[in-house]
Image (tube, rainbow, N blue to C red; front, side, top):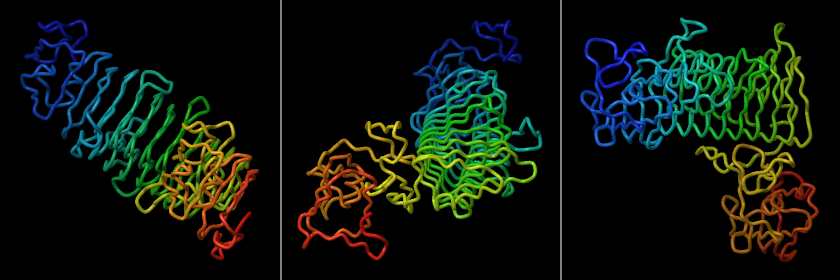
Length: 462
C-alpha cells in the first residue's frame, strides 16, 4: 500500500511502516484455508493464508484468490484490484462481517468478481451520497472507475442477515456496472425498521440481475432511485417474493423479462417519477395492495409501464395507474399461475399452468420451445405429437410421453401444438380446461368412464 514506485526487498510495492511482510511467492493464485496463517504464510497452495483479505492484499490484477470451505470472520475490501475471489461453495464458505461494517467493499475496480460465498452479518458503511446514512450491510459498491454493465460480477452467492439503512443486502452507488447472477438475497433488514432497498439499492448505475432470488427483505426487494435514461437496468429470470414491496424504481427505464413478482407484503411493483418500465414474459400476482402501483404525486411525471405477454393478477384492475400510463400490450392474461408449492418456496410451474408456452412468440426457453411466463420454465424433452394423460400421471416432472404421462388434461393442452392429440385414459379429472386457441384433438377413452369434473368452479371446457 506504499508509494507505487517504492519497493520492498522482495521486489513488491512497498508496505507501509517499518517492517514489511516479505514474501517469496508471487501468485497468480492465492490460497486461503481455515488452517492457514497470516503471520508467516506465503499464500501458496502448500502455505495458505488464514484470511481472505491477506490474499487480496498480495494479489495483482488478473490474479485469483481461492478460498476453501470454512467461516472467515472479517470485512474484506478489494482495494481496487481487478481480481477474482472465489469460494469453494456458497453453502459452506462463509464471510461473516461480525457486525463490523460492510462484509465486502468494492471501489475502484474495473473488472472484479466475487463468487461462491455466503455473505452475512454485515452492518454497512457510511454512504457517499449521505455520509450519515449507513449503507451496504452485505455488499458495498461505490464510485467505480468505469461505467457499463460488467465491471463487477457477483455470482453464486447467498447474501443474508445483514443490516443497514439503505441497501442492506447490496448497495450500488454512481457510475458502476454490476452483474448479479445466481444470487440469493434474503432476510436483510433495516437498522431501525425503516429505510430503502432492503435487498438491493442502486442509484445512477448500470445493473444486470439474472437467475436470482430476492426474498424476505425489509422495504423493497429492489429499489432504483435517481437513475437515468443512459443507464441500463435489466432483470431476467428472477424471483422476487416476501419483501414489503417487490420492486421500486424512478428516473429510469428498466426491462423486466421472465420475472416472477409475487406474495410480497404490499405492492408488487411501484413506479414513481420519470419511471418507464418494459415488462414481458413476467408473472406479477398475489401482491395484496396492488400488483403494479403508479402513485403519481405532484412531482411525479411521465410514469409509464409497457406490459405484454405477462400474467397480471386481476388484469388491469390489479394496476393502480393514478395519473400514470399503462400500455396494455398483446398476450397478457390473468390466471392462477399454479406454482408447485409456494408454502415451501417452490415457484416452479406445474404442467397444468397456463403460463406454459404463453410468453412472447419470439422468446424461447432453453428446451427450444416458446417461452413460459415467469422465472422458472417447465422444461420438457418430449415434443409430441401425442400427449398422454392418466390418473396416475403427474404434473410436476412428467413429460407427457406414453411412459411418463401428465395427471391433468390441461397439461397436455399446454404443451401441444396445432394438429397434436391429447389422449386421456379412463378416470376422473377434476379441472376446468381451456383449449387456448390450439387446433388439437382431446380424446377420452370412453364417455362413460372418462370424466371431466368442473367442481362448480366455472365452465368445464373453454
